[in-house]
Image (cartoon, rainbow, N blue to C red; front, side, top):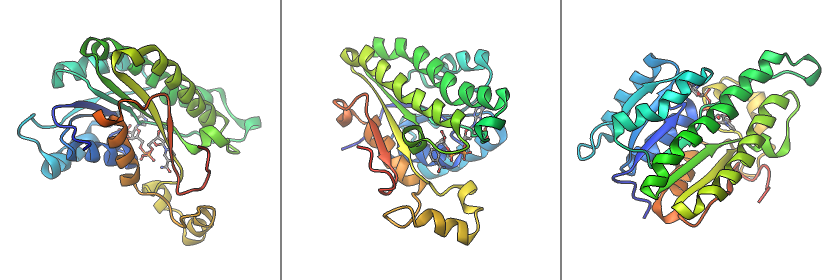
Length: 254
Ligand code: NAP
């Protein structure tokens, strides 16, 4: 079950906390992964680590593709570059994301634009570009990483919540368009996940967060990786247009 051998995946934001866990989870199930991010140095270091942990001689090793998702021209080149290096794309994980938090009254146009461009528009461009090769192959898996905040809202995050909610709507529309071609499109909405950012919070701040989570702890990157493996698998072929909430019960949104 959930064997991804022979499948090619592109993961954006692959050097980050959650992206690296998703890439590791997909690779450990046999997928060959194109790792993307804007910082080539970080990507290279992670790729070497991943190859050491999960190198798959049968399908070749994982590759890295540098791409600044705030630059539309670079985004348009990412799927063609993936096809060139991997030879195909079965799984697209739109994971890269940024926050530029501010209260509504103080939010600058650039803070809105940056968040929408990277979290929403880049995901749209990559889904559009992967539609053709996936339709031709009559198989594809799109996994978009949103956030609990896209469903609940959050003070100081009008831009981020709008972008994440936008990804949800976009995913459902795409899912309906391509369902008959063997392509699924779903979202994973993490709650609080332990990453470098949350680890830097002091104990009191972490306790305050944990007290809001019925499971009493933040999630791990691997919790998101496991959800991504499921949605990317052949076995999940009848699941589409859905959002899988992975938040330890913090918001039971079903
Ligand atoms: P992270 O550690 O900050 O990683 C973000 C990733 O996005 C990095 O790999 C970064 O790569 C990439 N990225 C940022 N700007 C980019 C750009 N302009 N071009 C290309 N890549 C760019 O964040 P994370 O916590 O793992 O979050 C991953 C996803 O999960 C995001 O979509 C986030 O919204 C979502 N999420 C996270 C949490 C959480 O608790 N951590 C909760 C809910 C949802 P470079 O450094 O190479 O640019």
